[in-house]
Length: 281
Image 1 (cartoon, rainbow, N blue to C red):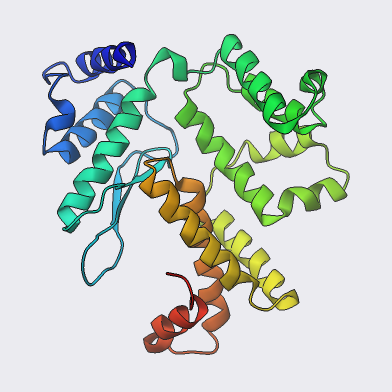
Image 2: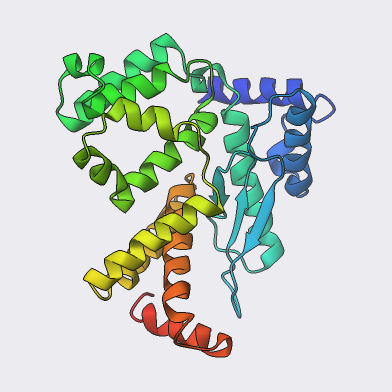
């Protein structure tokens, strides 16, 4: 732990040379420090290609505890894990979680190397009761994971997560299973979707998939949305990266809005959402 703290302080000294590494996480102006960190990376041309700004989002609430999310360049998302009595406090807490993760991402141990791949594949095999020999076969889950890691050597884990989020959502959405049924190999699917980042067009396509599921199984979107909201709250309170869960919530909410758009007026939309989510609290 002490060695990790020393490494983080070294990163701070390199990226933010005029800041005292020992005081950065105690600074109340952590929102400005996070912005400064990513602006520094932008000047170093090390920023993610897909996005270049930090976005804050406050969850609508009549009173405390307040919730705030911060999305970093590249799409990684974090939220406040403490119970906050004001929106400003929630924003600062979310920024602090994001700053710690941004700095941690700069450590050598967070960059994909040959050694990192070997260890990650071993952990994946252990957690899935798979076979290490599968790592050389792209048609297997372990092999596909190995292939994706090999294709991203040199990238940081946050950069890798930007790619992985697409496949996580495709798996959750059922699209990967559908593609396998068309005889597409995992390697072909990976090669195809590796060219794309998650954008509004892809979210809309996934929302349409869920609308089709709703027609086959009425109520499934509301059920999935309740699960997504619970998961989002749990990972936020644990201080973990939460983009996957937030994207699920956004896609399902978009699907619901499209379903109800032809049935209700804009003024009653909030009431319909409340009915759809009845029971979640």
